[in-house]
Length: 295
Image (tube, rainbow, N blue to C red; front, side, top):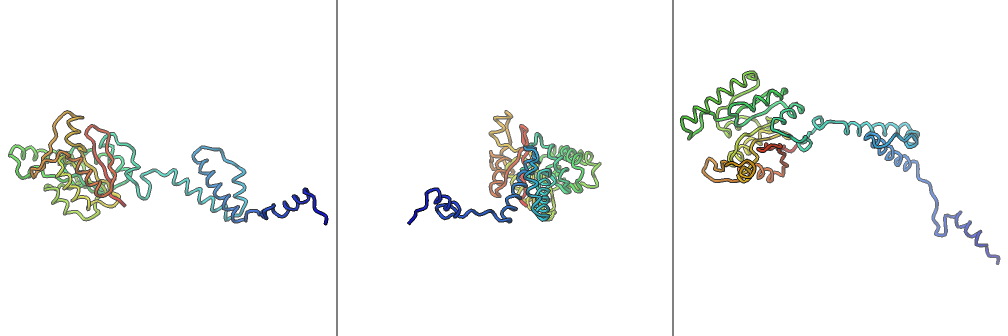
């Protein structure tokens, strides 16, 4: 018997797919088109970011596959471009986490305007200075509730009541240009909260400083806030923070006489922890806090 030479044996094995019997197969048209699609989408995303120049060879390979392939690539590319160029306030469900850093609480107002929010409330208005600044910037606001006790607070002395009545008069004068969209609720904040439907407000601002008042107002006004709405408030501090950073004392006693050194900060953090919320703050010595109701 004549044995084949080693050279002929290797050639025969190569023709049959190798010594292990492997067959050399080309990718199917479906696989090729899928790979080309992924390549084009990836490359065009890099082009949109300005990281690479347009590669003509990859684009032509995919677009020459079929009209359907070209249409799919164009649709995917357009969707990516829209998402990349879309501003945070233009998204269907804007997130507080996308807001830029806020230097002061008045920086919030331009974001309320960007979002084109319509209804808001301020709890603890006092002289109306913040409310006036809010409405000067937030031009899309159609209804703004102003809540406070002013001169009717139980247990206050006559001098304090007179002072608070002056604050109410001052607030009415300051907000006279906005009388068509503002409503005054001269009562306890918890009583005023009952006058609004669930999900009525886009934005609620709470200006209270002690733990109990903040906790009570958050609990009562959270249901009146719509999903995606923003709740904010002043004085995100506790007693230790004030002593260390501001060098002054801070009221820690609640109306019921209990001592709560965690103050407003403690109340906000407790609520955020309970509802698994993130807290955003302004970059002031006496920061403002913000939380968002989940969609």
